[in-house]
Length: 311
Picture 1 (cartoon, rainbow, N blue to C red):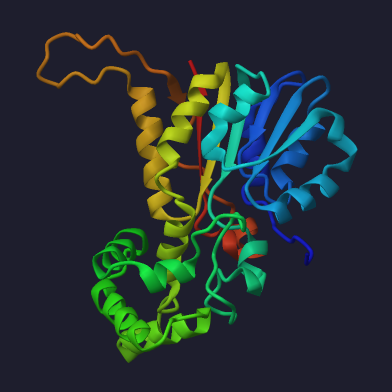
Picture 2 (cartoon, rainbow, N blue to C red):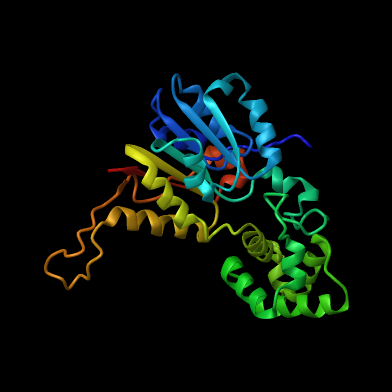
């Protein structure tokens, strides 16, 4: 395993937002290299930290980084979407906080053989959990045209979704598309030359879309947030960091719904649903990285932190 390098984004802001208690129970849903976990562990005395990740490399790196605090930590290899069953298996009913740093780690992007990057040639993979069966190769080479269009349009928000899907179908009818460069070059050929001069790499949106599909990144956000909320003690907090608009929209919508309470139509003179707010938003607007952080870590430029507290 190559060295697990990942700079934790919005580190101070997210740790401050969790309002950590020395004897509290906390969950790092996306442990990664352990950056956020380390700062939580430092603040615990009789407390407990559950570190979850589906990437074996991440957990190995985190165990090394958190070596001085292992007596307070439980490591779990799983998808954070399974938080209900994870907590139940550990006989934990209530927690005092949870953090999730969504998306792909710098280590995963920068490790060529993981197949996440269009800048490095490697087999099409993109699995966060390398034990799962579905890979980017499978998506590219076996999905129906309509599904490819849907994924690239919805998850990549790419206006050239139809043309990209058609180019994929045409190429794979000749021979399978096996590597990141093969796919990247195919997408480049679809894009008008004038659009390749400015803006993002032509393959950026499609690679994002395929990665999201492979790892089912969006569908789990709402149910996971609702599961976390159900386990929070009053005053407990949830802090979620996102990196693109689709993630942030899902987080914002879910937290807003949990903080709204009544779902009766505005035309009703009184509430008949009886629903009460389950959380309060700590900040209606997301917390953004400072200019200094963006300068130090360019990958933080799109990050947004949203925080809510159980009521």
